[in-house]
Image 1 (cartoon, rainbow, N blue to C red):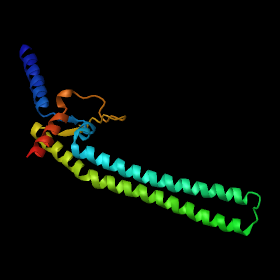
Image 2 (cartoon, rainbow, N blue to C red):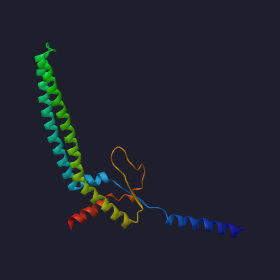
Image 3 (cartoon, rainbow, N blue to C red):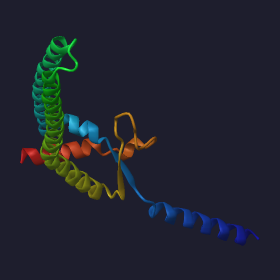
Image 4 (cartoon, rainbow, N blue to C red):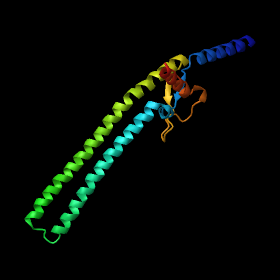
Amino acid sequence: MKRLIVLSLFLILGTSIYAQNTALKVGIVDADLILQQLPEAIKANGDLKALENKYKNELDSVGQAFSKEVEAFQKEFQNKPNDPKAREKQLVLAEKQKKIEDLQTKRREELLNKQDELFKPIYEKLYDNISIAAKEEGMHYILNKKSGQDPIVLYADVQFDLTYKVLDKIRKAAGK
């Protein structure tokens, strides 16, 4: 009986030790934190913000000019709804409004394209360095801890946080 208990205990412990050795290793990275500290990401954010402000000012200016035209139209034709000139002016204003909407759409698309252009190489660098750090640490998966509002990982042991190792890799690579 004692032999059976000892044998069972040995099998259970042996299986448990084997299972621990074959467990998946999961690491976490705070990609937002890394991006906040990368000079090229900081510059890209600044460039994108400057372009966004330029487009906003342009659209504000065009919008204000259009509003003034609409006000002038309303004052001029307020008591003359059937005036043929009023209909003509309405068509002109409708066309201008369409052009403003087209410009807004165009500027939005340009901003998205610029964002892709600026950040694609930065994300590639980040993912390459995450991959290197993960392989060096023997990790099977790396999850983005994401310091924003919607964290992907709700709990993780900090011993698996590779954020600073990835940041070190990027800094070392930049120093070469």
